Length: 134
Image (cartoon, rainbow, N blue to C red):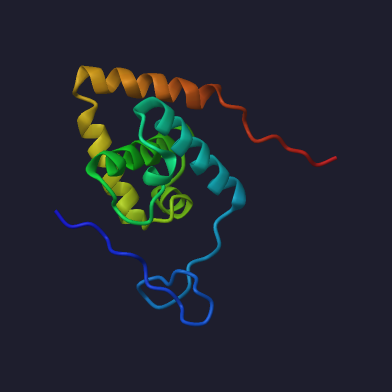
């Protein structure tokens, strides 16, 4: 199994460049914050440090699996499409899709399913984004 390499960067702006050569659009800061929330939630549940989960590289297999769980929770808990999940976690939509399918397959294991049910309950209990317009 191969994993995606570090994204190409624009020589001028140092921002990630899409495979077509066009720069990726900026990610909504609220989406990054929610992805960070999920990363820390999974960190607490698994004991894997959040920086290892959020690493730009694959890191260890345990950290990669924890990242996949966080992506899965974003897709299920926030009803985000794959493109939005990938962007919030600094990954491609195909990487997000792969992560979500892997976690769905692992849900057949009773212990893993119980862990995910607990994490999903935490996501549902999290405050919703308020409309602060006055």
